[in-house]
Image (cartoon, rainbow, N blue to C red; front, side, top):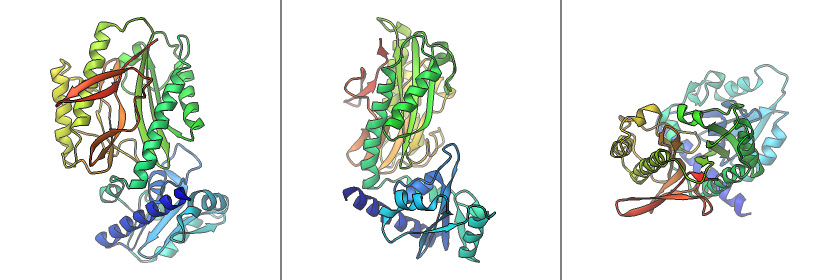
Length: 375
């Protein structure tokens, strides 16, 4: 009952935001077909069958008075029972035959007629929504924050559980499989799984897993998705009694940059100023140009990154917004997901008490970051 009440409250808040947008933009309707925005608008509902696509099999049409999900007869029963029925009377569902070409497009066009409307994917020829609409997703509701915290903890647990299976001789593919298995076991959909071992960890910043066998050094990255929300995190493992001195220096520096970025992520601060704090910390740690070799992360939530931080990015940090900064130095990386709350930032994805940590002090406050685990 509590979950149902929370979803209804979140859904009502989303409809209010969407209809406020329609009024401000002088629109009559908006159609949400993407997996990300369908999940956001329906308080965590899923409209996917194929995971690796932007769009889904159900399309959410919101007008100033009505809200209806349009799909076909294959999907309608499950979508209503498992994704929409908890939301109450504020939404209905329409179904058409799966075998009729263009049936959903035609129904959308019949309903919107000559009205002014937009589509997040351009479905049925609608004008595309832009940043003004996406901005509606950046400030999280209390209900989203609650489920994000749970998701963050479970993604951290999944990564650590997967790494328990890690041993020399395992392939990168096998480790990626363990990560995805651990996520699915917790009801979390793998959005991304990267693995790099040994020299690949020093060469590539976005290392998709390969059939290479792991020897001594591993970087593992996951993005876990549930109810549309995405958690991002990275963990490192090294086989040996002691970490090489230069690798430890790199990782300590990486963690210091991580905290420079996270600690400066304060409500109202322009992202270019947050970014500058990270760039300055790279220079202080004698890795001046390392930031130019990979993006440093930025806001997250319903996208892996809503947009990335850059030296010129003027958009401000918002209250109740999620971020995932990911500074890297060849061979190492530091990344977790945070919430920006009234009390300050909150790391929601760990590290756990079982994982080794690096303590980083900035402006008199000490933060715990994930160290490289020795085996």
